[in-house]
Image (cartoon, rainbow, N blue to C red; front, side, top):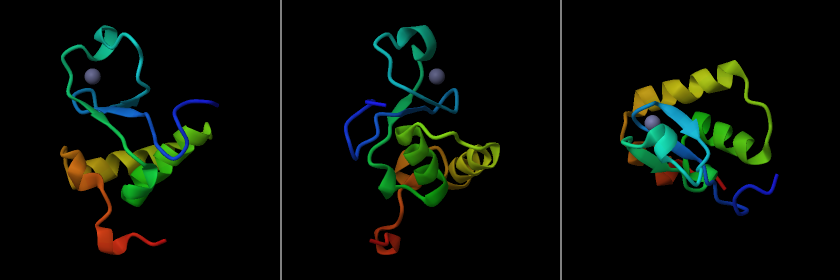
Length: 93
Ligand SMILES: [Zn+2]
């Protein structure tokens, strides 16, 4: 509740630890030397990533299956976050 602003996710993904994290004031504790990606709007990502981001934003519990799909999506699309975005022509409104 009350995390981030509406419509944009403040969640981070650590490309080195391969985990989602919430930005903390002092990142040196955990991801000091890590490469960090900051997620944008959930809606622009491929479905398994979008779903997890939306649930994080809404504070809804994420199932193991959803987490596995999230990790598979990243494994499938690679470590470059640009490739996690939905191709524009496939975005349904
Ligand atoms: Zn890390």
